[in-house]
Length: 317
Image 1 (cartoon, rainbow, N blue to C red):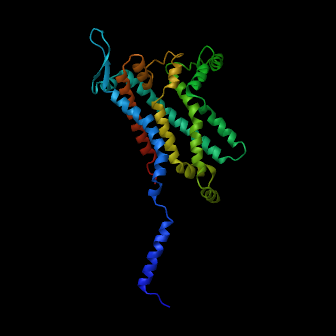
Image 2: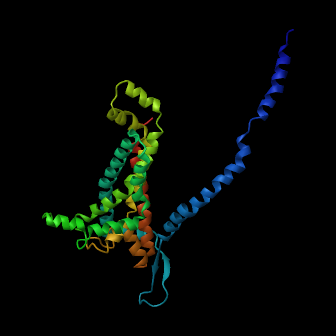
């Protein structure tokens, strides 16, 4: 028995809708997608976008009083005057230079230590790996202000056992000196965030297919060669993520200098840009200038993050 071509086409048209009925279209999930994403979008707009927009708006205004100092203060539109003041301020450039120097040294050291620890943890095997993960992560679980206070006891010349030990050896240690205090802050930041970044990198390392590593070992590659040629290139996105987070955190450096400001004469109220903005807003009531400094910091953080991303992902497929 033969089947003609029209009959075959009619049978195909009859079967095609039956198959299509069992396939869900993306439009059918639109309500669920909106319901799941809407809380995040609202939270993102409220906690990230709205403050940036408000600060940008505030940066174009200034709180002023009349020439004789009488009457209630009033807000005047000053355009880009606050940005001009910030860019012409020696305090702003000095504070920005400190944190850039801080980041150039501290961020590579911290990420290098995090990468080494992650590679060692990934290469090791044993029941105590989970314990070491908790130990390395524990400093990050301590609030930043508390960590700075804890380290301030080790830096204070009057009560520090490290200073006493150094004096007994004739070293004359002074962790709060004008040329050392910045690196004392870098030590605190490295101690806090190395374990956190290590866990991010370790998670990326454990996602690498094991058959690639086994094939490299069969070919005679050493663990050092595997770590350098296979593991590290494949976790480049995780390294970029930790690098961008570290750059943003460096621009926002505040807790450590604010705590050490109490015991260190070398740390003034304008030591970092965030301290400059905070003092301008809540000490001098110069909210427009503080907003302008904050917007400039946001732009600098974004620019540095883009530069780092382009450099780190150069040559990646």
